[in-house]
Image (cartoon, rainbow, N blue to C red; front, side):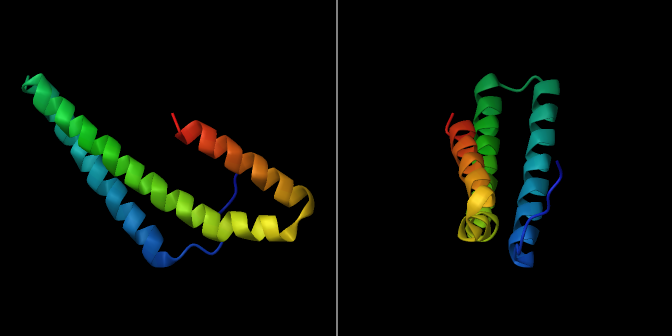
Length: 97
């Protein structure tokens, strides 16, 4: 099932796209480091940086989802609200690992 985000601010979307592009560059850098046989601890430090950057994007996306998509669904009540509660619980479980 393919759905679109509801009411996401253009500046938020733009920030997330820029962040993901920066992360993409970091991952390519890690690939080069591995190919160049760089010191493992340096590579692991860069991997940790990528993890933190992805967590930042994830936080922003979760905030946006709660503010725009979830709020509307929950306010509407009924099956739509129940489905959103299930989705939010699944998201929290999946992303808390």
